[in-house]
Image 1 (spheres, rainbow, N blue to C red):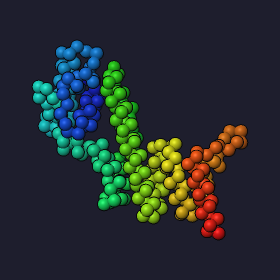
Image 2 (tube, helix red, strand yellow):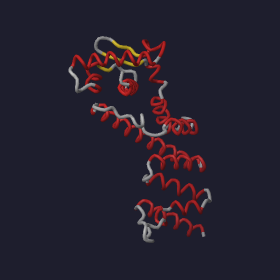
Image 3 (spheres, helix red, strand yellow):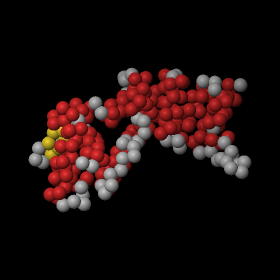
Image 4 (spheres, rainbow, N blue to C red):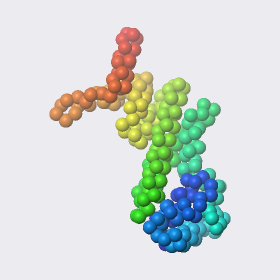
Length: 231
């Protein structure tokens, strides 16, 4: 049976967070070009194949009745996505362990969801998957920004710089990520790296210097004024 469709079925059930999903919904997502009867037959085969791949616990892991299909909530809770979402929620909670949340987010978000997966002929599923990829990417960015704010308040310079670099890896154009990193490098006394990071100092082809983004230019003026006051 087509392994990509079995993978797609598992992904959709996992992201449904343990809730039941109608057979009609799944058949329409993965076999939209087939007749209703053929689509439902293919879904039954995919459920059987998924259970086999999950081994001895397959039948209890993938529940199904005449109308709906679901994944055991315990399996969903143990998935990387669920653990990442929990860590992202903890990032903005001042009561949560800051370092534990940071380590979990960095460990669990290692690129887009199901990177490289594209199911031929399943436009609706592919659109859903792209939406989930975007949602999780934005969640990662928001969580890292929350961690950065907490590190700046707590004075965690090295940990904050590590988070800023992770943020820039996910979103190289993140103005906030660059601003945080530049500010933390300055506070840590790492002026050489701080200067290399400033986009207005990087020449464009032909020797012209790139125009800084407004927010970063404002940061430069703020820091220059602070240095003058300190002198």
